[in-house]
Length: 364
Image 1 (cartoon, rainbow, N blue to C red):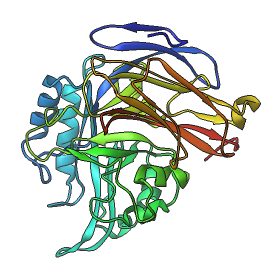
Image 2: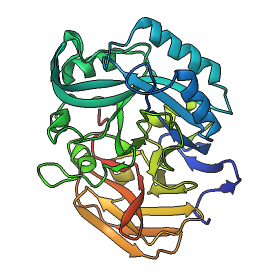
Image 3: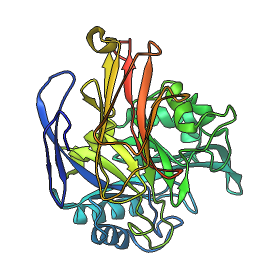
Image 4: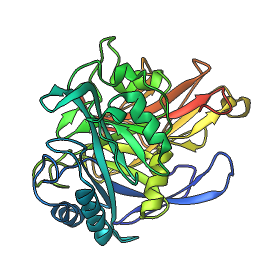
């Protein structure tokens, strides 16, 4: 690799020296693989939390979370919540395996016993001290969910499987903005959600980004059987300083992650010297051009790379690219975002979180 940053490759991880926009201090990151969305017999899955964390660890995941439903097929209980947390704590080991705990906020259509359902969609929620039940009056709307999430001392959320239950989920992403929602599932189980389009013909990922959401490229195996970590090769790849709860959560908060449908893809994506997830303000000190670089270390070969600008504009599409690949392009809007997509044949295999260019000093 020959990016203008230092790299050292090993069988276990990739260390990448990058620079923070605000401090310009050098920070070393590792790339860790895992996902957050899974289920056990606590809700509508199989097995125990112990089974899930044990298998995920043995499958080679670096980080993993269980996210049983808040009310389906029965309400989450304090007893079960405490059991899950205790089990996760027993598996969590800094530098070895990061065990996270969460739940799935589940707003489906009303059914018997849960007449409050409004079919608003599902969220993976991790890192909160408790849960907010979408089947209860104080958490049945998107506004109430966001209000609850923002009130928590810790915790993040991801839009789950957009359009699985209808194209009007999440109120077309017109819910109140919060920086606690950091991503969207672009894959779920073995289904592709990146290419799915809403009523206006725009991919759901881009629809949310175009409406001002600062989100990255997530995904989850959403296991309902005993397939934790082995259902497929799909992973979220997170760039974090260390393998620990604190560091993984910090990386998720900053959107330093990408989604890959194949194993062993080490990817670096940066624009104007900043890595994926970054928000560059005031056109990077007056520089209007965008210089973006994609570099990959992988046994897999990619047939082409696309750089997507503001969703409906492909900056460049290069067949059989030579890596590292760099493209320079002018700004097309005052506020814009750019992300990379890597393909094998006609199928996407990797999507990055965007890099955002904004005129506002504080986008939130």
